[in-house]
Length: 97
Picture 1 (cartoon, helix red, strand yellow):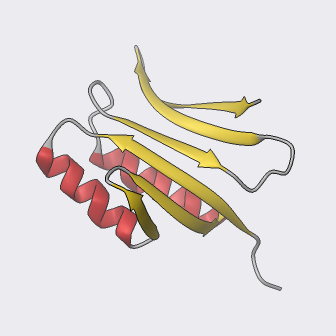
Picture 2: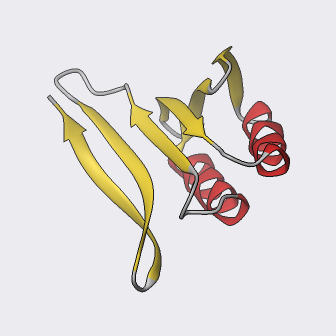
């Protein structure tokens, strides 16, 4: 049985050229660029989890931002964004209406 894939749109705003290059290099392995800072990806849950971890290690959460939109839902779209709180790195989950 094949794993279900989700259509994920990933947008980023990376302030440092070196970090941006590394993020782009990682995203090229998973999807297709549709804009300078936007990628489309078809990912299984496992691939998405690996990509989240990988990109999370590459960015500076105080100055960089990556947002992930799951466009596979028929009635709503989910998103995940990155931010830093007092304890460190965390993901924010939400729904677009």
